[in-house]
Length: 157
Image (cartoon, rainbow, N blue to C red; front, side, top):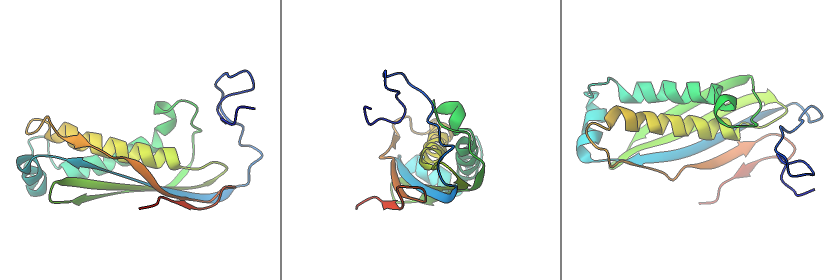
């Protein structure tokens, strides 16, 4: 065994069999940010972008993306998500995003949380790109996960 769960003994990619794992409540939170010009940030803050309310659209995009993670990330299991929360916070230089996803099942929701945060930030870029094509997304990372055999984990710092 090579230690990578998505590769079989011959090194071929496969979906992990989680049928023998315990059903537990699982939750994950991922976060990222987008830095932008003062002009773009002011337009988002004022809700004056030509494309509409960027924060509302980004929040919905994040929720939709979490639900579609297996369509985007190969080998992810389709999961019955019980909750998806996308929080967007305006800062002095852009927008911070935190996405929290929960389920009760046999595998975790880390990828769903990361996908939600990514899609929300990409949506903000799309909505404001007419004002600032130089926006920077990142860093994006997992902040915490709970449940499952490996238990709880929290990022340092």
